[in-house]
Image (cartoon, rainbow, N blue to C red; front, side, top):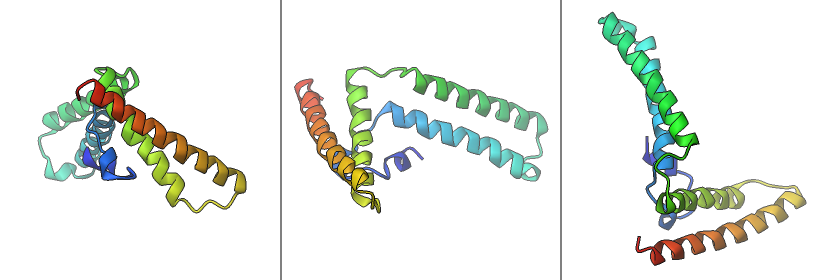
Length: 131
């Protein structure tokens, strides 16, 4: 699930593993555990265990949500590692979308240019930091 969070980056060179995408993946995986137990309850006959797992998955989902919102463990490198794929997704969306409105087309042109410049700058900073 973690690697699916990178599915929409523009180029492979913009794939940087980061904790922000991990939080997003965990916010998808833990609820899936709840849904699986709820839908396939007959396959899991241990009711006390199921209740414990549902509570644990719910708490882990909430924990991942708040840790992501608080940018827990996000410092200089993790910030850049998170932002490069984010900017790359914006470029892909602008380049691949079927946009017909002239103002939005102009906006996308500006987005592609500015986001690529920022990606290049962030990669330079990562090199300077030795990462």
